[in-house]
Length: 53
Length: 348
Image 1 (cartoon, each protein chain N blue to C red):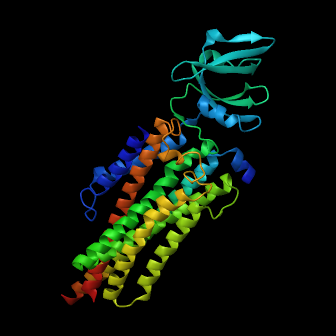
Image 2 (image 1 turned 45 degrees about the vertical axis):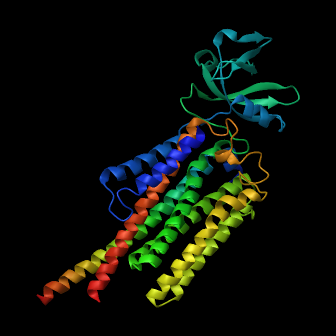
């Protein structure tokens, strides 16, 4: 594996760029989860307000 | 020239990132611009071929036995000579058409030598005979050519992603410090939130730079972790900011937490320029730009040909797009945190 990578160095570049993209995507998923939680909270809050009325 | 191009990328990233404001939602054209910049960076990283100029090739080849590498040269069909089944081809500098040396090609001569003006070919330099021997064709009449940096070769492309990650970490820590100062001055807890999330993003990019650097080190230096000054300094930097998170998590009172962590964040940032820009340049190591490397690294070197214009452009776009991506992410994070605080306030 290491020999293959040393002979075909473009794949190292590919691996490194993919790691950066995967990292960014994980971060975006974390943000997505936070937005979802917020949406849930806001919906619950709205339902509670309507019940009060 | 190189400095101007890279500097433009850095300044453009910072100025556009702060538009219209760090806290306001970004307009649509801004987002399209960021995605466009990222595409250009990926394009300039993967599409061009690496081709060495003659001076670099000969410099490297004279230190290694039977060095084989990609050489970028021009040929003229009328000057090809055949002697005893071998072709002797004068090779020209593609920039100024001066003859630099003669390439020896075993017959049959590939047809590309008749059709093309400029060629990137793998060439072997025999040190004992002082002769250049053709191995195989890489690219014919290439439109874009990346520079060949000794010991890096194809790996020069990683630079467009690895270095901007580290740079974004510095920018993020700087904003963390700025908002900590603002918090201490105005006592607005939004600023404290901003400082915290900026530090989180900075650490995230610092970890990405470290991990990509480790894989690069495995291929180029032999092992993932070498305690090279650059690796040691980023490790210390990560420890300093991990301590910042530990400090925040260990305090319950939100006001004391905000005040103490703001002071810590300001002190922590003082170490950043030394650990990132100064210390690795003072000590001897493997990373480009160390005290024992022949120049100040490919970015700061004043020597000609360490980076060609194309690589400088790719690098500049890398800086601009990663800085803009940071501003986009911190903007999203900030808006989410503000909404969460509002919802919490309404509920309880």
